[in-house]
Image (cartoon, rainbow, N blue to C red; front, top):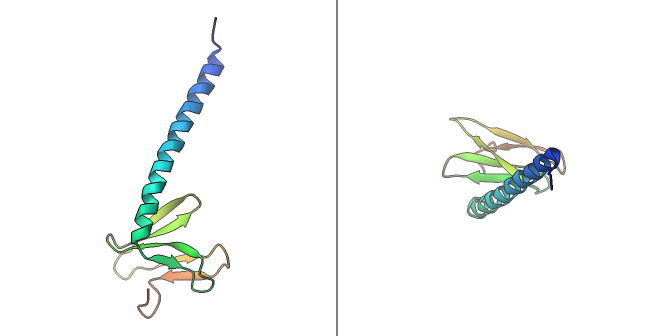
Length: 99
């Protein structure tokens, strides 16, 4: 029996995709574990979760679809994020030194 090269390539691509998804799921669980320890950053207006404040490495983790983006703050730096629910622009750190 002969094998079709296109079929073999497609199966290899599917295997690679399956492996990548499995690895991403493992990473997402570890991200969730981190999230349980760090304080949440929520929208000032509606309370929607925007991300997490990572006090250990002085960074903000922003939720972006299925993953997170880490933004490291410099001295006097500020991060702004638009709420996906109400479109309010939130800033961290908030003015007045609040968290």
